[in-house]
Image (cartoon, rainbow over the protein chains, first blue to last red):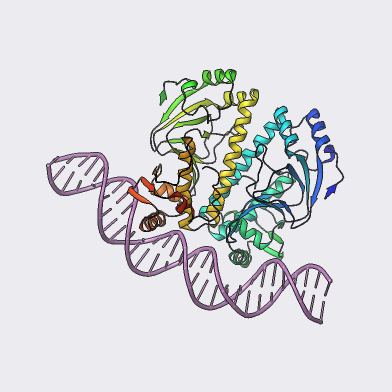
Length: 243
Length: 243
DNA sequence: CGAAGAATTGAGACGGCTCAACCAAAGTGG
DNA sequence: CCACTTTGGTTGAGCCGTCTCAATTCTTCG
């Protein structure tokens, strides 16, 4: 669904998205070709194999990138939150499904027009490269989790990544004190993200709760009373890239 | 160890590496600042946490990118073959270990000098972006393997990725007929790549051999008599990105 | 209040891991 | 040239963590 445009100057992700380094000229062009689109919770943004006619930035809401095998096994490969970029300049087709898990607002560009900007604006090209390198680092970091970590470590690391991501989105320090998290994902989606089943994921939440490492006022809310203590559950936790 | 330079015009990876799209001017600059370095089998190229003083392209040999957790668990996140790029412009430290698994020849640039070229040459910047996007796709594809595939599927997919990679390096068609592979990795390294143990990996090789899907004249050689048949072992195998 | 979906919990099965023995190939030194 | 060692790979037996299947509870929303 089409939405009214918001001026880039007022955009909540102006300084974190692909347009972050755009100068006044770049921004004028981007502003002229962008359109806002809203995708309802559960809606598809692109399906694996589909053409990528547009690229976009997530302005609000949460989306997932995943692949489903023929027999139904499903693995999420990325969580898309505000300021994240969707699409691949220079590539016509998506090899993953991208779906809204909450109502999502996208700032969208037609792919050819966006590719032209990438070619003409070093600022935008540079920003896109930096974001892609960040994504790559996040993906590789996640590979360590998928390949080698226990269910407990996966859940703990997932929660910590949300803590960090929320802190960085709000430009805050990472405090040790109680942090309240809103989970953007269902247990099923979390399981797909972590390479586990729903049941195992749920059991790990329960175990962490029993041991006082987290509290769960509701299924979608998690309180971490002591972030440092939760961090101890994850070997290797160097802080890691912000996923 | 320093080696004599090879002219870019004679370089075996000239048309596949980060310099592939470089024009004559770019190439002159690259040629003037590059140096060739050889790293012996088993040697470290960079360690996790170390400064990235240089970036480089793999000219010959094979290297791995991996992380080792404090308790010794290890996950490989990338296999580096000729034409692959090592390093991250704009980031000073590596978050993974990069090690030579055979004697490796690198075409190396000091990071600041290379970053300058990326800023001044749209061709190089564009090529770097494309390569990074390819790497990202490969990393995400691998996540599906690590998160959801069985040991048997992992080994089959690994072998198929080598078949494709060899074919693409030599610009050949992917044939169904017998393909002879040289494994660049030990069983241990393969296990680390696939998120398995040595023993499980070895058992899967044995099982595939028993069933006639592969032959193993020696530990480092694998013959795939029928690529299509091996492909049937991997659900989802859409061909996938070339890892 | 009832229905449907989401999450939790339990019991048992199973795939991959651990520990251990064994084997083959490649050095190494007397 | 032959013991001896070392390194890398294979195989076996049993264990354990996660999955599967199933029942139950909790939420949400007509």
